[in-house]
Amino acid sequence: AQKVTQAQTEISVVEKEDVTLDCVYETRDTTYYLFWYKQPPSGELVFLIRRNSFDEQNEISGRYSWNFQKSTSSFNFTITASQVVDSAVYFCALSDSTGNQFYFGTGTSLTVIP
Amino acid sequence: ETGVTQSPTHLIKTRGQQVTLRCSSQSGHNTVSWYQQALGQGPQFIFQYYREEENGRGNFPPRFSGLQFPNYSSELNVNALELDDSALYLCASSLIAGGFYNSPLHFGNGTRLTVT
Image (cartoon, rainbow over all chains, first blue to last red; front, side):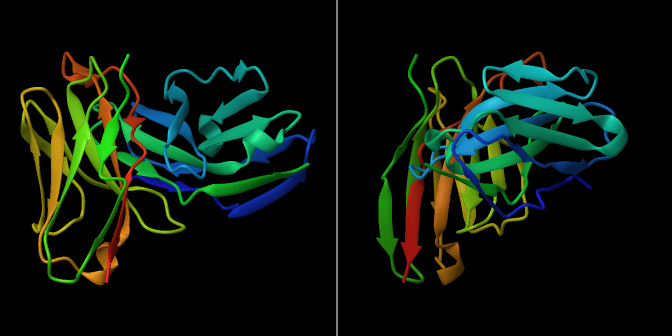
């Protein structure tokens, strides 16, 4: 069975602090994809990143970085020097290679305090 | 590039009624998926449409049904509405090519359905 766990329900940080959002997944598939989405108050889920199960290289995009570790089934997301605009709910998601169905975690609500 | 658009934005219905939600996929995408997001929860997969046919279904009863049209737009229909159907309904489009999807899901802003 596919499952995504985001143990952190809510996180508050002060602007310019670094913050890491945790994501642990379960799957029996050997080929799968992991995602992070951002959901601002407007409701739209904004795509941030996709990683496939064969690529464990960490990725950095501006202030965002992702740490994928198959050994611990984790795909953590770090925001460096957080800004107020980063305040949102962040979802980690998992799909198999067909992309037929995405399994989302319950989300982590991030509040960045100015 | 046109993104995913959903209508209406908000909707209030009474228990037992029927509702139709609409979605236009992002240009270049051929697949539409529908998700239900209850308050404080992650999105839950309802079903996916590809080539105008259902291409996978989550754990939702048959009163949740859908359609995909030749222009790849889609409708979600819910019959006999229940109070627990109150949620944000998200439509997402993607591209399947060669039997595998080649793009992540791109979501619309959703339709907020309230059942009273």
